[in-house]
Structure formats: C-alpha cells, structure tokens
Image (tube, rainbow, N blue to C red; front, side, top):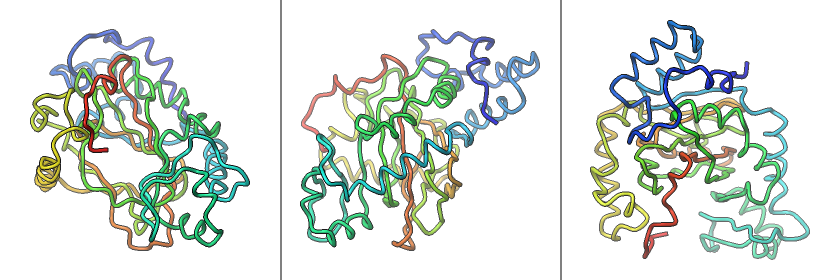
Length: 310
C-alpha cells in the first residue's frame, strides 16, 4: 500500500514554512505533536509509527513507493552500461577497485577496454554519481513524488532530491554521517535514501547503520566551522581523526544490517552513523540507488571553499 502522504501534508498541525533551526521531529514538542495528530486522526496509525520510529531511532523503512517496473528499467540500463556500442557523454565510473585500473574512468575509456577487462570491471566495486542526469530510468526514481512527499513529511519542510549514487556491488565504505559530507544549512535538513534494486544478501556487503546515533550530537561537535567546512575540505591530518571519532561513537550503539528485499527503502537521519558492511562473497551484487534530499535553499555546496579532499 502506498502512503497517501500528499493528503496528510494538507492536514498536519505544524507549519511547513518554519524557519526553525532543526526539523520538527527533533524539537522538544515533537512527541506530543505526533500523539496529538494521531488522536485527532490527522495521521493514521501507520504514519504515526513511521514518524515516531524516525524520531526515536533516526531511520525508517518503507516499501511500495517506487513501482517495480521503474526498478527493473534501471537495473536493465545498468546491466548494459559497460557493453554499449557508443559512450554516453559526461558519464564517469568512480570508485573503481579493479586491478590495473585507475579509480575513475570516463565511459568512453571503459568502452575502449577489451571485453574481458570490461567483464572483470563489472564484477568489481564501482559507483555512478548523478546517473539520474543521464538516465531516464534513474531520473524516474530520482523524481518519484511519493518519495519526495515522505521526505517532506519527515523534515517538515519542502525538500528536493539533490544527489544520487548508483551501485552494483557493496562498497565496504567506512562509517560516517552524511552531514559530514554535505554542506547543509539549517542543520539536519538532510535525508539519505537507500533503495534496494534487488534482494540484498547479508554476504553482499549490505548497508549497516546504528540506530539512535543521531541523538545528542551536532555536526559542529567535530566541524566547528560547519557548514563552511566538513570532511571534504578539512586538512588531510583531520580525516583519520574524524574516522576515529565516528568509530568510537558507533561503539555506543547496536549495529544493524539492511538486508532488504527488492523495492524496500531505508531513509535515515543526516547524523545517523552508517557505512558498508563486509563483503563475504564477491560474486554477489548489491544493486542499489542512493538519493540525498535537502530542504529547499539548504544546499550550501556552492558556497564551500577548497582545496577539497575529493
């Protein structure tokens, strides 16, 4: 069942034009506001449970927001990507972890490889940034209105999808908080969205996350000059310091793995600690799409000054 979030937005007891520094689910009266909305039947029991789960644990899981056909179309495009007859202008494959290849290649450089090299590359770790700008199938998911309505409901402001990443395999990415890699103001007006494009095995390096790690923490605790400075433009010496800081915080919480079914979606708070789980079977894929939503006017990326670490 698809949530009728667009209808809910019209009847909620809080303003979606608030200039408050924190999203409404992080304000002191959030729990009472939620209970009142449920009592007055402005939200259903299902919506109440969804929002209260986010408020308390920093994430929620939904399904049936994105049509299966949209997912199938994107998976088909990704399967053909390295075997097309002509290159897609502007497309780059990033984060490559394949023997004797650089970490980043343009699509025409990939297609110039011999067929065996391309087959090996497909079965290695890599990612695509901004594929929605090139692929109609990815754009259909990126622009999904049900997903946008849900994010708006969580944040309490109008939000927009800003960035996307597509993966074929797990990444074993280190633990981090998304607020540390995006420049967002006001604080925490950011939602990460992880969409399973297939059933995900526990051996494929699933997404891991730490419920409640978003609480009692501010991005300025480590980055006092945020949003001008974050992990992308701190000094090189501070990067391992940040990693130690996050790893130590994570020890205070239980770790969960998102071994999702196709079409399931994990939405998480910008300060929730998460990363890539260990890949136990390199033959398994972990087809997924990540979208980051930011409140309208809240993306400060263009205001950040380098030099940048990546």
